[in-house]
Image (cartoon, rainbow, N blue to C red; front, top):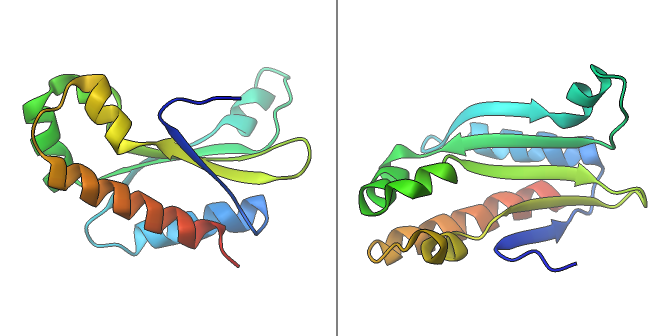
Length: 133
């Protein structure tokens, strides 16, 4: 299935370990702040529905996000950053996030290329830590 603008990686560890490793690496970074965590699986059970493990963590760095919003305020629809951790029926665990370079095009950002590259690199590093044994 094609997911334009979404980067997805397969984890080498369990769902819970992937999520906890992701949470820890974000929490231990002094430049990042966790803003919210959503447990879609738990939310589904409140209406008597079943969903495989699916959680999202939202976090940000205003020093990087603010210049992007000054260039194109609509990027606020996609900020703060979000990383989704989900388990498929096969048991495979994935992490997924929006590709910052896709967001550049989506929102018509014409400046701040260095910031977008920095965010892209940071998201790659954070998710690599999350998915590795």
